[in-house]
Length: 248
Length: 267
Image 1 (cartoon, rainbow over the protein chains, first blue to last red):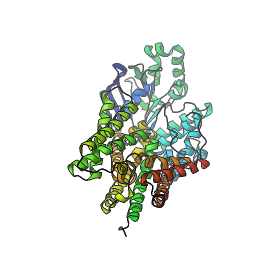
Image 2 (image 1 turned 180 degrees about the horizontal axis):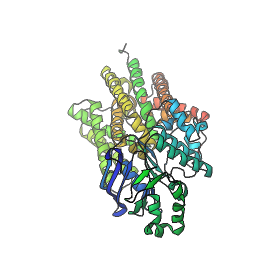
Image 3 (image 1 turned 90 degrees about the vertical axis):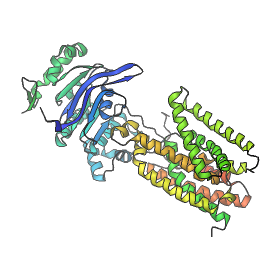
C-alpha cells in the first residue's frame, strides 16, 4: 500500500441527499498519485455525483471529503455554456488558470484539436468540444484529474487514442485520475482500481476482483465480466494475496 | 476648467462609461439586466433617505441597493416564487415607496425628472470625485475577481471544482452593481442606468469575437454614447440621460449591420 502522502482525495462514507432522496450513499474511496480509479455503474447510480463530491462542488454532504490538492483538472459530463459569451477555444483554455501559448498549443495538439484554436467554442461538434475539454483539463498539469465520461461523442479511433493519452498523462505527470466511464473494454486495461456504484458502493477492487464479484455480475451481466477478465493479461502489475497491487 | 457645467458633465460621463463598459458585459453574460433594473429602482428610496437624513446621496443609494440585493437573495431562498417575479416585486415596490416618501417630505423640493432621467446641471465637483474614485475602486475590485467571476459565468461547476470560489465572486459583483448605480444616478437617472450598462455591451457583443474585445468595444461604445449624448443634450436642451441612451441605441443599430457570429438555431 502506498503511504498517506500519496493520497490526493479521500471520501469517507460520503453521500448526498437531495429532496429527501439519496443520490448516493456511503461511498469510501481514495485517489492516489499516479493511480487511475474508475467509477462504473448503471445510469443514475451516482457516478457523477460521487465525482462532484470528491471535487467539493457539493457543500452539504454526508460523511466527509479530504482533499489534499488544489491543482485540479475537471472534465464534467454535461457542460452547458451560454452562447451569449463570445468565447474562442483559446479563451476557454485559460478559463481557470493563465497559461502561456506553448502549453496551450501542446495540450491542444495532444488531444488533436490544435487546428480549432481560434474557433468559436459554440461552433464545435460534440466530439471536438470533448477533446477541447480534455485538453483544458490536462494543460494545467494538475495533481488530480476528474474525468466524467471524457470521450463521449468522440469517434472510435479517437476514443482509443484518448484513453491511451489519459494513461500516459497519469504516468508522466504522476497525477491521480478519477475516471467515470461506460466503456468497460478500453478503460479496464489501464485502471488500477474499480469502484462499482449503484446508489452505494456495490463492490470495489482491482478490475479482475470486480469482474469476479457476484453483485457486479448481477448488475452488468455475465458478458461484462468476461470483458474485464479478458484484459487480465494486459495488466502491468500483479495482485498479491492480500489484495495489494504491485507494479511489475 | 471644472467651472463649466458641461465639462463637468463630460468628465463625469466618461468616468461612468469606463466602469459600465466591463460591468455591462457581465450583466449581459450573466443575464442580470432585470436585476440591475431592480437595484436602480430601489435607488429612489436611497435618494429620499439621503434627503431626509441629510446624508450623502451616493452612499445612501449604495446602502439601499445593497440591502435590496440581500433581501432578494433571502426571498429567493425562502419563497417558491420565480426570480423575475421577486425582482418585479422589489423593483416596483421600492420605487412606489420612494415616491410616497417624497410626498411626505413637503419641505424639500425634489427634481423628480432629474432623478429619473439624469441632470447634467446637477453634477458638482464633489460628484466628479465620487464618480472617479468610486469608479476606480469598482474597476480595481473587478480586476481582482475577474478570473473567478468569468470562469463561473462560463461554467459554475468548473470554477468551483478548480478552486476559484465562484460564490464569493458573485457576492462581490452584486456589491459592485449597487456601487455603479450609486455613482451614476445623477448622470443617467435611475430609470436609465441599466440602459447604460446593457446597450453598449449589447452593441459590443454584435461585433466581438472574444470576451476581451467585447469589453473594449463596450467601453468605447459607452464613451461615444456619453459624448454624442451630452453634446445633443446641450444643443437641443434635452435631458442628459435619455440623450446618452438614445446615442447608445443608435450605435447598437449600427452594430447590427456588422454581426460577427451567425445566429444560433439552438437559442
